[in-house]
Amino acid sequence: MRECGEMREWQRNREGDQREEESKADGHLLCPFRAFGSEASRNLKMKILQFPDSIQYLIFETMQPHELFLMSICSKNSKSTIRKSKNRFKAIRFSSETYFTGFLAISCYGSFNDEQFVNAVEWKVTGNSRNGDSKLTKMEFEDGMVLKFRLKTHHRPDKPPILCIEGNDDYSSKLAPVQLFNYVKDLFQITQIRELRLRRTDFSDFPKDLKSVKNAIIDTYCQYVNPTVFERFFSKTKVENCFISEQSVRGAMIEDTPILRIPNVFLENATWLLPYHLWNFQGKHAVFENSKFIKNSNLHRFLELWMTGNLETIDSVILSTTENTWRFSEVLNGIDTFRWDSNRRAKTFVYKAAFRRFFQKDFNFLDCSEGSDIKKSTDGTLATIRILSETRSGISKFYFLFFVWHQTFPSPENYQNEEPNYQFV
Image (cartoon, rainbow, N blue to C red; front, side, top):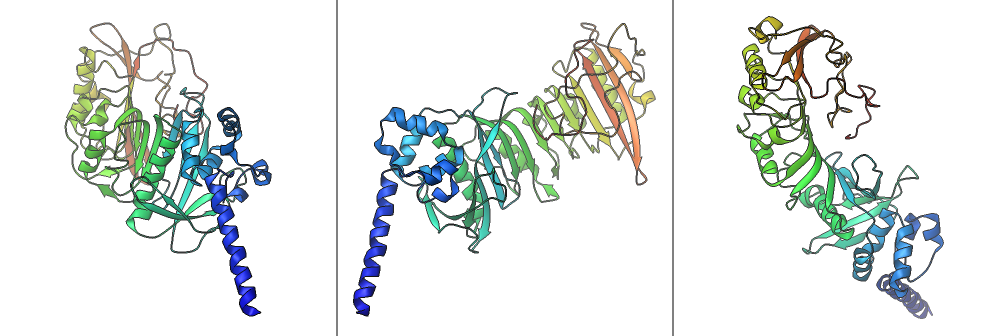
C-alpha cells in the first residue's frame, strides 16, 4: 500500500511538472511568476500565444515592463513574440547603485523633457543565501551563460519584484548586470541609452558593445582610479550630453581626452586637470571641483583665449580649489573690465547646464551684479567673472566662475538653484 501511495504521489508531481512546462510553451501569462504580476494578471489564466497577433499586442499594451520581462523568460516563444510586438518603449536607463544592487528602467517617451521611467528589472546579488519568495529559476542567455535567481517581493508595493541573483563569483556581480542590460535592450528593441550610472572598480568594458549613451554618472569605491580606465571607456563609448563623476584620478589624463568634448561635464574631483585641459575645453558647461594645478596665470590665459575668439562653444565654466589662492588682481591683470550695467545685461545668469540639479551651493553663485564683465573682441559678446571664497573647518576654498551672455536678457527658467531633484535636465 505504501508503494502504491508513493507511486500516486510521484504521478501527481510529474503531471504538475508537465502542465507547467506546457503552460510555458504556450505563453501562459507570467508562469511561473503570476504571484508577482498585477492584480489582473494574478487572476488571469490564458494562453496568450494562441490568440491572433492583434489581440496579443493589445494585451501586451496593458502589461507593465516587469511583467513583460518575466513573461519573456518563461519560454523562447514568449520572448520572440514580445520582441516582435509593437514597441512602445523608447529609452533605457541603467543604474548600478552599489556593487551588488541596481536596476534597469525604461521609458515610453523619446523626448528629453517628458520622460517617465518605470523599472523593468531590479536586481540584488545575494550570494548563496536562499533570499527570495519564489523557487530557484534559471535564465539562459544567447552566449550560453546561465543566471540563477529567485524573485522577492519589493517592500514598496508600486515596485516590481527583485531578482535575487545567486552566486558570489565575478559573473554574479559583474557580468550578470551586463547580460540583463543587453537582454532588456534587445527584448524591447531600445536604441536610446538615456542614462548610465556605474559604481564599479573597472567600468572600462561595461557594456562591451555600448557605442553611445546620452548621460553617464560614474563613481567607484576606490579612492583613486587609473586614468586609463576612463580613456578605455571613452575610446569606445560616446557620451552625447552629460558626464558626471565623483571619482579621483591618479595621474594626468591625455591632452585631448574626450571628456573635454562632452557638452556638459561635472567633475567633483578634477585633481588631474592641467592648464591645457582647461584651454581646450570644447563643451558648453563645465564644473571642475577641487582642481590642484590651475594658477592665477592659467585663468588669465583662459580669459585671453576667449576674448580673442577661441573657446566659442562655452556657456559657463566653474572651478574650485583648496590648493591655490585666486585673486582678481592677478587673474584680470591687464584686461579691460567694467561693472554691471542693468541696461547692458541681466543681473542673474540663467544656468542651463544639464547637471544643474546635481550642482548645489549654499550661496547664490548666479548673481552677477558684483562680477566683472569683459568683452570678446571679435563680436562684442559679454562674459562675467566672479571669484568667491568660503571657509569651512579652517579650510579656504576658492571659486572661479565664468558666465557667457549669449543672450544679455535671457528668459528665466522654472528651476534655478533650488533643492536638488537628482535627474538630468
